[in-house]
Image (cartoon, rainbow, N blue to C red; front, top):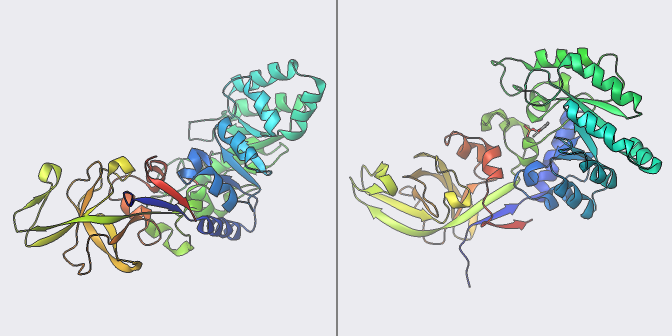
Length: 375
Ligand SMILES: *Cc1c(COP(=O)(O)O)cnc(C)c1O
């Protein structure tokens, strides 16, 4: 039996290669490899294998922290949103996680929890579970304002906690928008200048564009998966990052159009001349963006040799299970021709950008029904 031909291949070696690039770019600064959202849609298991040389992984939910430990991850684990309730600390200590603390309620939970633990548990927490106190340096999403930051720091230190320092940039990918990385970095430096502990601030965009933010630990996410933090492929083209995922399918039908004929729902594309159209087994129910307009690039390969191929333009509205491509200039296009929607031959950013989104969203939105193969 031949299945519907769409498939996502996870390219473990490319993920490792991208971590290596980050290490090189940052003079071997320790890393939190960010693997939230199921490793940006690539799967936690291949990501852990690929990121073995990272000192730590950063994610959000206890289920994935547990899974990481079950899969044998012995490195550091950071919970980026910290605890959601006091009882989460039972798991934190059992799994030896490090936690972000970003609001006062979390400090209260910690005090209360420590108050009802055995001495052994308290010691285990204080030894194995450093805290990353988060400063709101201008993004206004998570974190303490500067004034409150010092107070919380002192409370945690007095309890015997190891406290490190973390902040997050709002505009590391765009020099034109305020607050700038420099503004936020200055606020972070000032708030932490008399404190002990490590500092972590840089996401992918700051790793690439703002070397002064690398500090003691970086937090690369999107660049590990081979896509651009700004959403523009040109911004990372020179860095030698490789795609973490190939989303590929096949041509399942062909149509011959005459001038004036239209394609698909809403007849959003009209042929100006005789046009050969290929129908691809991939639609928005697979995670391809319905917002992708005419001319979004699709790679059409030769049967059995996908590397030999060319880009052809999407035409008409993407439907649930299919999309159409103008293959008038692709002489070899036939039923069964391999197609790359995004990946090593067709950068995901070049699909995301015309669709008015970013590689992040496409990766994370890959549908469950797409079979994944780990290479
Ligand atoms: C997601 C996230 C990152 C990684 O961001 P990228 O833009 O994917 O590199 C880093 N730090 C925090 C706090 C995050 O939430």
